[in-house]
Length: 430
Image 1 (tube, rainbow, N blue to C red):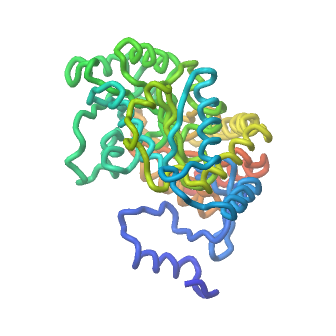
Image 2 (cartoon, rainbow, N blue to C red):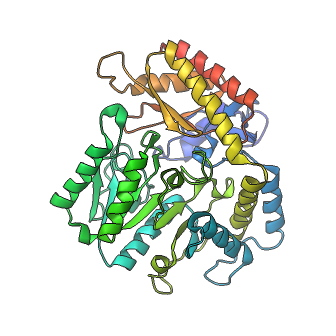
């Protein structure tokens, strides 16, 4: 299926024949190549990619330094499995993550392949350390598509479907959302209600939270909520896990989202932009907690693949050498200003929210309750694609449009994207 005549529509029909409907492709686009923030389909149409592999490409598509690191590593060793022999790139990634997250404290890391795999292992580690069964996550949180991952995930459609029965001893608490009237105080009261009615705190191994909910709608956890959660976990001997899989690596203006609140988590899960497009994830945490599982209890054939580790080291170098955090903050100011300007003339944008360059708009109905309007959100997404901009939705009601452009996006590209979004809002009737 590679001849000149087999373009976008033909390949989409081919996809329909050979790929199950359960894996959704958000846009009817077949990509041919990409560079930086730009992507071209097989018919040569150019798009601004403000999805970035769903928050994977903070350094952009095919960054030359990442590409070179991958090429070099493939020529040396592509795979050996760290469970069989050690290799330096794995060790160096762990050492750097330990320093970036743990600072001067003794932290250790273990590497895996996907974000869901990191979450699963973080729960295993927490349970091993505490010898407790319970785990609390939050409504609207997203933690992966494995059976445990969807159980931890705090909304039903489309993730839970008829996939149960689900693992036991998982409980959900409310997550702050000022736009919908859930204050920090109410969220903390909800958590105490879980302790009172579902599971006593001395039976809880871990509380897992996204410092900014990703798929749940780009909702930042207030600083006071994160600090209260840290104090509560310390008081009850509960392992606090920060899921930084989408939030991490500069998306919010700091390298990790938890750093905005001045707390120190016990465990951190990371993936997505860690390796610039290659599959790599990890659990990073306090050494005494990480050492709880006995030898052989952690692992995975491809976990910490040598090529992915080489890419990760290149990504970490880029953050140090090219001031990507500074670039992201400058872009964040420009994007937030542009979105707020659009909100003034398009009242169906109920809220502009997020942290740093992790921004989104919530699309609502024209009523007093600001009812979520998923249909209009999809129309805007479709019109944006027609105008050359790729974005995707999120939120429990799928009415939030999120922006995940690379931190390497240029000012001109961002201005072009805002113009495309404006066109889409007008054509969609927002």
